[in-house]
Length: 489
RNA sequence: GCCCCCAUCGUCUAGAGGCCUAGGACGCCACCCUUUCAAGGUGGAGAUCAGGGGUUCGAAUCCCCUUGGGGGCACCA
Image 1 (cartoon, rainbow, N blue to C red):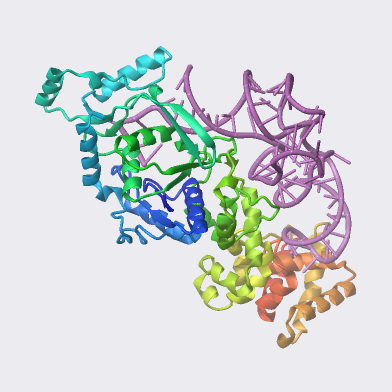
Image 2: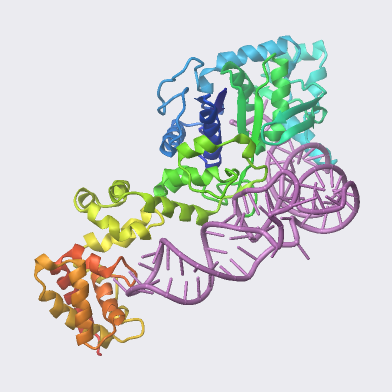
């Protein structure tokens, strides 16, 4: 078994491409086949090295590996079937196009874009299917000679044989198309650039691909590919068309309506394990009620015949949940490592490990960490700037309550030996202070929480206090008192 | 317009004729735990299996039709 993924570097790695790559990967690895990466950069105008880098980097990030093809963006090919970039296989396409031409299976077409456009418009007006009218297919030798003498560049069209194409799709079963309904399509542009439907067939044969697994959007293109590959005398691979990933409105997932770049999810702090697990379940399930799977487990369990036929909406809330599950499953050390890029370098180098327990159960995405933890590394004055005096009041209390709490807290904390400034002891002390002040614990803690973390919602108060240490805690309470002083009770 | 594909709670799904008065998960709502927020626990609402015909002793599961949705019909991929 030889399987491939064939992304086009005309944009960053798309969720849909990533999912198709994942299904190909899982199929190849499950069956012990070979997995190939081919860069489909025939559209030179839209392809860039930057996008190729984005695609390869993010595929690696997801943990998807391949046996053949470039392993690094712009890097050298690995494998005996190269080159693996279509832009480097132009001679082969030209030779195959010539073969088709010589056999009469393709012909030159001199129709101009304007002419083609006019025909298409007329067809639309007449409510006919828009397809090439075949004008250049039946040119006389004299007409052909005239065009050639003109020196006008010609495109090459495939003369689609009038036949019914049937194939047994790996996920959809028997499918049948009438190719008589197809127009002769262009396989090589007038400027010499070979087109997708043609190169994909040439390359799959050249790379001896046995299983073509791709999005359902290619299902109705498959009869074209089969007709082409027959005309070229190639072996027919098995085809499998997986369901599409959908926008919330059930249309094909698109940049316009959804966040489609894998890099964007990565930048928000989604874990690759969660992305992979989530994407795998968009259109597949093991047939049981289990739903948390590592890439290795997926490889073990994945089977193409359990893939669904209907499309699936990309549900962010479900992804969020799964991401949280994966974050919580990480050890503190592992999570600290992952958090590094989101934390100021000085903090990351020093006390990051100690911060992890404060946020581990609260993180949806790694990128949420700074919001939760900034109070730790920001200067006292900055934190004090995050709130105003009324915010210090307990939910059902007054600023006067806040003042009492802070007075009591300041005295209580100041009395603690810095060496004993630990969460357990702090809590006991604070509770005693609250009781002495005649306040409910919650009402007492709330103002302190705001003073210390700058927010009404924060990690656990006493752990935060311990982290800050006595002096900074006292300083923040002092700052809060100053603010309260400006407010008449 | 033509061709093709698809159709179980809002969403992801289990279900391959009787185990289904349709199960799980996300989300939602309660309650418990609790210093806030989370996490966790318990419970709940939520799908007459798109609709209609068949086949069968029996249908979410098989067949047909309808409806709805989607994809494709480029000198893009």
